[in-house]
Amino acid sequence: MDYRNLQREQLEEISRSDRLAEDFADYIQEDFLISAPPDLKSSVIRRCTQPDVQLAAGARSLSRRTRLLLYSLKVGAAVAASVLLLALLPATFPPGGGPGASVPFYQKAQQITHGLNRITYNFTDWEVFFNDKEKE
Image (cartoon, rainbow, N blue to C red; front, side, top):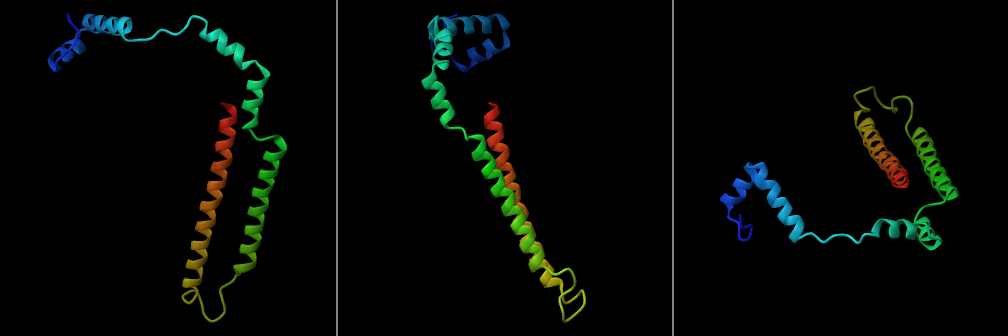
């Protein structure tokens, strides 16, 4: 079968027949694919073990002390935010009424809490992103 200028019907016929599909794959492999150099794998491995490549790859990663500092800053910010919220939000109803009068106050407190939760989740996702990149 001539594989140049194939029509839709011919492509459907190739997709239905295993023998024609294998012949078409062989044709594509022989005529269109560029083969890799025979020493590609060994040259890549040899190049990766050279010190200048290892230094360049290591320059992008954070040191242990830097990661510890970032983690400490995140924990410190979370503690500071929680202490601030504890100081700003009273444990009892605000003066001047019962539960009905405090609904707007607690709705605002709930909005602040949701916002802080979103920020906290973003921080933890960021930490997971860095740890996943290191494992690759």
